[in-house]
Image 1 (cartoon, one colour):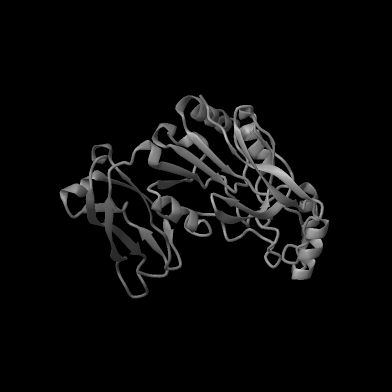
Image 2 (tube, rainbow, N blue to C red; image 1 turned 90 degrees about the vertical axis):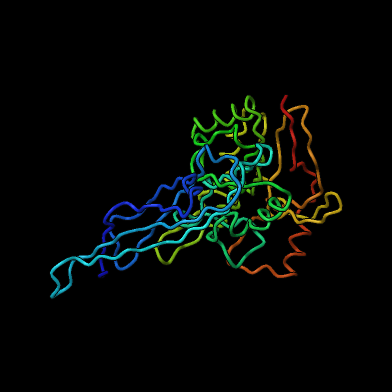
Length: 324
C-alpha cells in the first residue's frame, strides 16, 4: 500500500471450526490509514448459546486495504491483511466469582493536572502512569485470579452493566464525577440486586492541593490539581444514600491484618458510617497540616522532622456493612 490507505470493506471473521461460530466480533477502525499506520479494535463476546462451552476457538480476521495508484500505475493498490486469532473459552463463572473493575471513572494526566496518589513520592508530581489492572494494579489482579475470581473491566458509565451478572463492583482510586443516573442505579444494584461494593479511596485535602500548584513552562500557566489522589467529594455524593462519607485527613503508617504487615500511604479517613456496620481502626500519622511540596526530595531527616510534627491518630478507614 501507499502512504495513505482506505478500508475497502468491513473486516470479516473466518472461524477455523464450527465452534468458532459461537464467537461474536464487532470491529472498530479508522476510515483512513495515514501515514502507513492505523488500528483495528476487536470487541469479542461469546454468544448466549455458548455460555457453557469449554475449549479453544481459532480462526482469522481478514481486512482488505486499498491505496490510490502511484505514479505510473493505472489502478489502485490492494492488499489483504490476515490476523490469526486463538481464544481459550471457559463456561460463564458463577456470579459470586465475577468481579467488575470500574475503569471508566479513572482519570490520568493529561487532560488535567491529576496529582500523584502517594505524597511520599516527591520526584514525580503527576499521576500519568494510569491506574489499571494491567499496570500498577496487576498484583491485585494476580491475587484475585489466584483466589479463583474472574475480573472484567468496565469502560462505560455505571448505567451500562447488568448487576445481576456480577458479585462485586471494585472502585479503586477514581477521580471522575458521577452522573445522577449512575448514583441512582448503583443504589438500586446494591439494595435490590445484592451487588457487593468495594471502594478504595485516596487522599483529598484542599490545602494540600493548593500547595501543589506549579507553573508549567509548556503552557505558560499556573496549574492547580483538579482533584486529590481520588475525588472524595464525588465518592461522598455516590455513597451518601448509604450513610457513608470520607474525610479530608491524609493518613500514613504501617498496619497489620491477620499477621500481614502493610503500608497505608496517603489515604483518607471515614467520618460517617451507618449503625450496624463494622469499622476497623489503626493508629496512623496525620500529615494533613504538613501538606505537600512537589519540588523537594524527601530525605530521611525530613521524614523524621515531619513525623515529629504529625499527630498520631487512631482513626477508622476500613469498613464493612451488610445490607439485609
